[in-house]
Length: 64
Image (cartoon, rainbow, N blue to C red):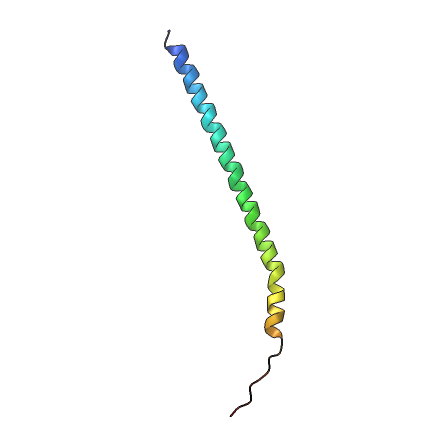
């Protein structure tokens, strides 16, 4: 009985620590997903500007 209580306290401490670590990791993962979405949106906004640059007329070189 003397060893049971310290073992229960140690087990509870381990469970709480692992749970806190997992929650922190999940929050970071969610933040990374949000950042990827924002980057895709920014890239989509910049993409039409690149298309316009490709459509710009270029000077044709005279044939020899």
